[in-house]
Image 1 (cartoon, helix red, strand yellow):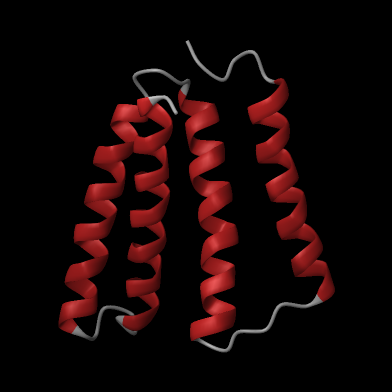
Image 2 (cartoon, helix red, strand yellow; image 1 turned 90 degrees about the vertical axis):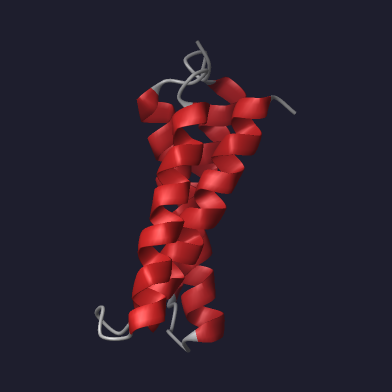
Length: 111
């Protein structure tokens, strides 16, 4: 697997952890979860910068945000008891489909 995908994976992972901490921080009223938000987002952007060395910003951002949306919706469902109706599940499936289309068929994926 190319290194830029590994960096992008870690960027998505840390962004998801940061967003989870954002929920746990209760609008930045809890100190340690608020610190975790800042740390995880900083790490995420740092990792994303390495992915941007080999991939265009639009593609990196589409994958980063799309996978982040799907992961955080799943975490919200499991950890925070947030509900996902059929429309939400279908929308998340379309996001995954879009990422697959970019990965399999886009020639602008790397530069």
